Image (cartoon, rainbow, N blue to C red; front, side, top):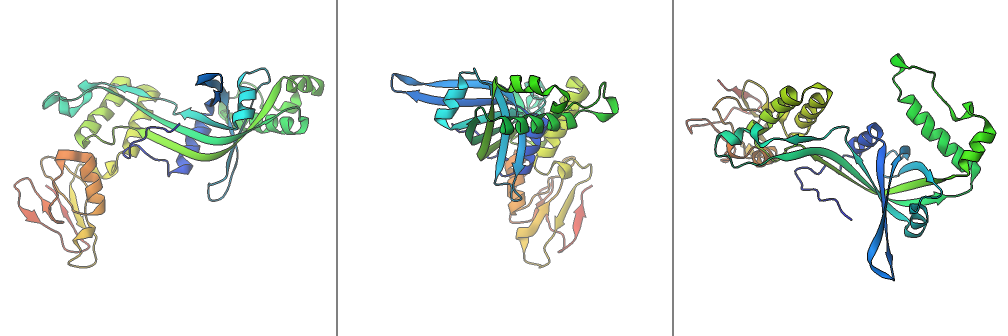
Length: 311
């Protein structure tokens, strides 16, 4: 199984950010499947479980997730047999985006509603640990300590709890009913679908919708996620327009960058970054050999290392 992940939304190379999403939203959906000789259909098993990241190598390549599940869960023997699984983690919030928010609606109504979200699909090799008291106890302690450490210290209603606070005979009995689950990740798929494929005018209106219509913690979360993931938003969102030539050589137009837009001025670049922005922003950009194009179609280009400031 592979996540549908168009390049505009694909952040699978950002392992650090993907792990941060998992840490902040540890309840994952564990998915496994197994084919049967007696049936053409695969048997799919699903279980919601809280996960903890046990270890991450320095280069981020060796990541292990741990959890535990009921010994009587039908998914346990399937995991032992299949040995592979996927765990799906979702961001704290996701949201409906009304077509009425889009700037494009005022132009020709050629727009439809959508849904914004962020998700991580963690693929891995799973190991089920049965009847190993030492392993299971250490796993429980790691999981509990991890989640207890995330409780808000300023507003704790009771002291932090440890597994050792419970009577040992009671813990021994409880451990007999569970199995340890250890997943060594083989691939992380990270998707952040936040309208990166829309023009900047639409994105600004979407952010206004989140802030003013949705509001509260969810509106703040979604608007910030949109701003963070839109290419060049921190620059494109400025009230003043800039066209900068970052090249140290007079003839190197490939490093000419368009930093932001305002009003009707349209500053454009023919550079790697410029082409990426042009793909995102659509009709707001034109491209012409590294020269800025203003609203009256005149050409201008700043000297190396300098910027033009738009009116």
